[in-house]
Image 1 (cartoon, rainbow, N blue to C red):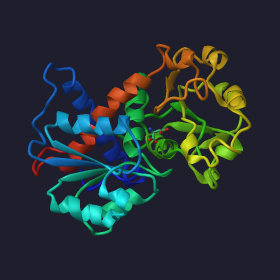
Image 2: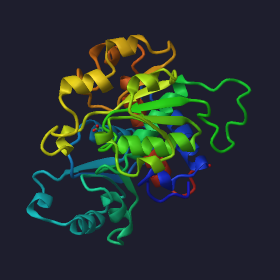
Image 3: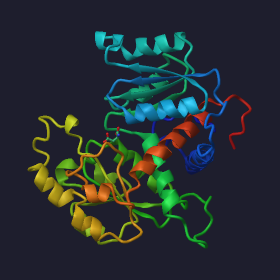
Image 4: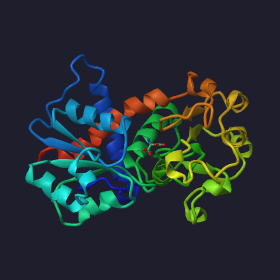
Length: 328
Ligand code: ASP
């Protein structure tokens, strides 16, 4: 793969996106073996640089790197010199000097991953594990992997390698706090690149300025969007930690939010039988998603987590595997 970093889905063309997804499938196949570890990145060091709280994404990247035999250093901003005021630049210089081979970064500022990769402070591949409200490319890739597995193309749908055909005909509804969601942005970019149709559903207060220019439909009415029989319904977490004052002004009350935009028991029961229910986690049960929907056999939330490890193994492999490894 010619990519040096994985910062946004927009850096990928159709072929590169499929290459990551196909490599993730190959990685997943190795994970059913009794010994899951591959020697591929033996002797390489991956640094998880997390300036924002995260448990699942950090553990997922750590697991992925370790399954490829890399050494992993977890560098969390809390309790580090970053909290004493060290700049991103000095942190980057330190990592390079210590001999890191790749950096996985999560940061509350949109653009931080791009800056780390392109400011010239260090010469290491960077994977964006979520920057502010901007992008979370490996999340979108694991979501696409999950959709590919469940919403298979029918024979005769055309040439799967022709651009934009991989998820052609698939309708995805993404619901909730789009305003603060790097997951929604990354998914709109990737799903449309793969040929799916995306509808965003949210109250006007939780939609970003300029959303009309995104390559998707926008609907304020969840029931109207569900009446189109989507193939996948992706519920977004209400990101109260990014709302100031907490929860204030974006919706009248949690109860009203749930009534209008929650995947409650009635809406869940009315979904077409093939429709899958997705959530990037962590879930606010009773707010954006009911326990009935979250725990049902049609919920693929746990599979999303498993696919996350495979996608991150694929990304690390493609960016880091030694010269000469077959990438094509
Ligand atoms: N875990 C995802 C993220 O980091 C989604 C969320 O936090 O709501 O963006």
